[in-house]
Image 1 (tube, rainbow, N blue to C red):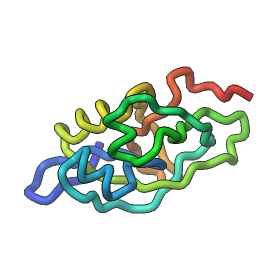
Image 2 (image 1 turned 90 degrees about the horizontal axis):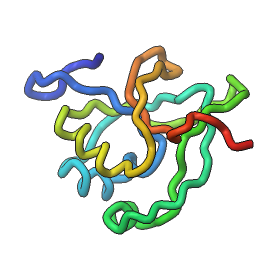
Image 3 (image 1 turned 135 degrees about the vertical axis):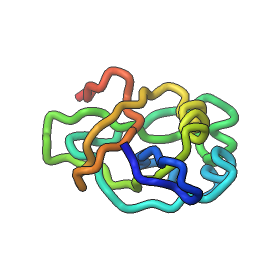
Image 4 (image 1 turned 180 degrees about the vertical axis):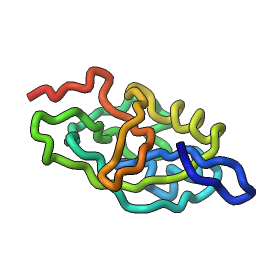
Length: 125
């Protein structure tokens, strides 16, 4: 799953629709800026998520984030960015994303990527 990064290391595809797209969050989480391609997560919608982890709030600048939840409307989609990261960076992303779970899914482009979603994968409404 993934193309190569600079230096030949295999890249792990990670789709972000939230704060991992922010340069300040990338620098504090990965110690570098990421480059990526626009894509979308199909069959999901955003729901507000209050974050309480002080390190995450400091990195993102806000306690109010969003989380992807499965939608009964398969035409719903969440726009975001597909990044290629290293194995070590995936561990850092997992630490940054405190409560959500990481799943592997197919994006609108047809590419497979990891994405963080609500733990129950259910829409509350």
